[in-house]
Length: 76
Image (cartoon, rainbow, N blue to C red; front, side, top):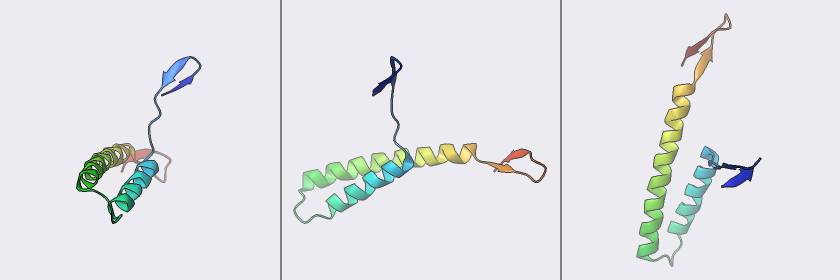
């Protein structure tokens, strides 16, 4: 959490940051010396991260709108 103007503001990660985290997890899972326990923990963390990504994408899809030729907006 960071403080801005005396208020607590929680930084939310972007979808791109989450994708980078997934790439890092995959790279660690591919390392030859990783233990079974560590690989299982990374797998669990990866599943949680994927679920968060899916939720974020669902939210974006709900907000998408199309600009019509007459300047009005309609849901995509």
